[in-house]
Length: 83
Image 1 (tube, rainbow, N blue to C red):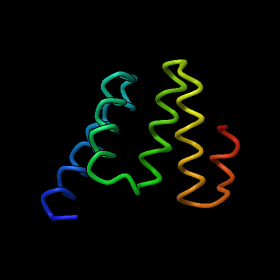
Image 2: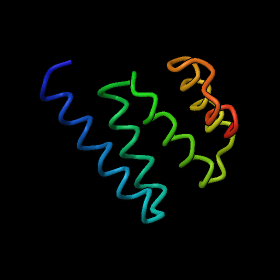
Image 3: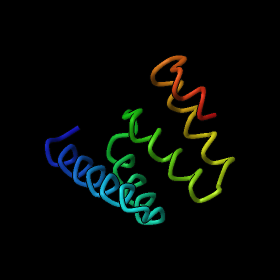
Image 4: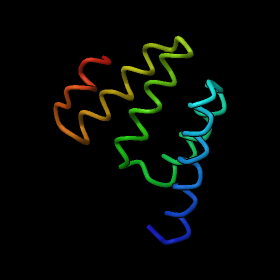
């Protein structure tokens, strides 16, 4: 990953965090999708997307995100509890 790609991914992840904190779920989801397009290996971003999808009542998609977290981290207790 280039430095520019990394900085773009981080930019979108930080924007997503801002939107999550203010309950702006659709905007947070869009930013997390952009961040993950640059770096799909970030388990924290997949976890955040799962939480966002739960807030949007999109449970099947949320479970898919949590499954991806488990693939990346192993059997993470927090992720299993959210599933």
